[in-house]
Amino acid sequence: MGCRTRAAASELLRVVAGSDAEGRPALVPDPQHRAPGRGAHLHPTTECWQLAVRRRAFPRALRSGVALAGALVEDHLASIQQHQNSQSDSPHHRPETGARSS
Image (cartoon, rainbow, N blue to C red; front, side, top):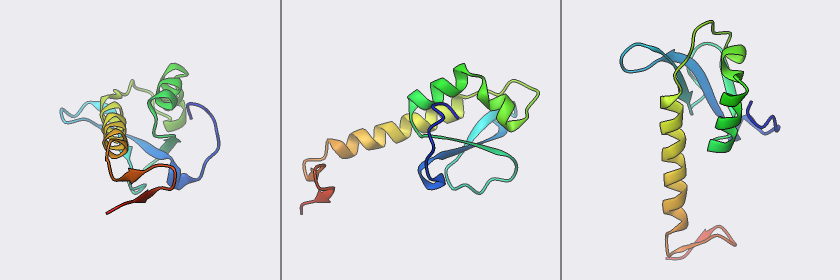
């Protein structure tokens, strides 16, 4: 949605319209691709997320007439980024081969 680049569904993050902890309408990440209802897909990067937000792609794609908060998706993307950074900092990870030494 954001960068409009094609990719396999397994590589993309599905986002659905739902509600946050307070019950307000919000965009909700669906990494398992199992939530009911209409979904929108984007690459799990902050760059793709920001492009989609700037283009106002979510209300159109999800056919939502109300404003949807994006904090849940932003938090999810931040946790993905943090997880990837912690893996790349691992001394036993060899990114050139993808292998791990023991």
